Length: 176
Image (cartoon, rainbow, N blue to C red; front, side, top):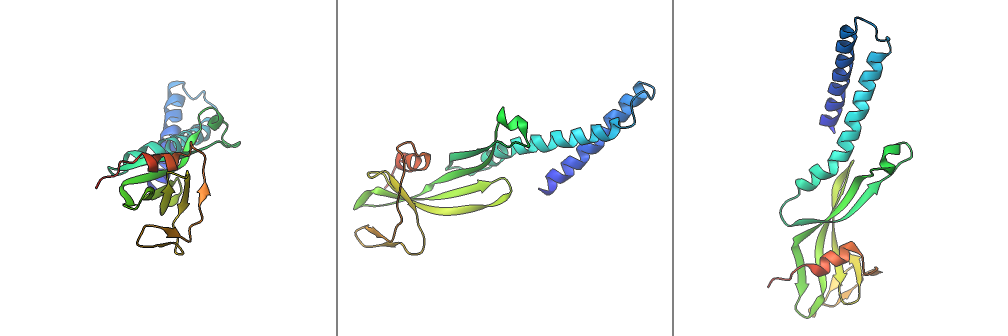
C-alpha cells in the first residue's frame, strides 16, 4: 500500500509536469486550472491501474501448488467503469499439497484454503469436503476425528454440483 501511495503521488507530479510542458509549447494559452486537473487525472488513472493489476500480480506470486478456485469481482456505482470491466477484489486459493485423506474414508478430503483480499491480510482456513455427498465444511475447534476416519462436530454445507471449491477439492489427485 505504501508503494501505491508513492506511485500515486509521483503520477500527480508527472501529470502536472506534462500539462506544464504542454503549456510551454502552446506559449501559455492553457487555462490555470489545467495543471491541477492534469495531476488529478493522473492520480485517478494510477489508482485504477493498481486496482486492476493487484489480482494478476498477487496470483502470479502464489507458490507452486496453489490454485485459484474462486474470484470475487467488484462492481461499484462510484466506479462506473467497473460495470464494463469489473476487477477482482478477493479470491480463494487451494493449497494442493495440503490434501489429507483417510484410507477408510476416501470421499472425505481435507485441504487448506487461502483467502486473499485487496486490502486485507491473507486468511487460512482448513476445509473438509465430502465428494460423495456433495458437501463441505470449515474445520473449527469442535471437530473431532475417530480412528476410522469418521468426523463429528462438523457443520456441513450442502453446495451445488458447480461449487468451485468442492469441485477443486474432489478433482485433486490423491497420492499415497
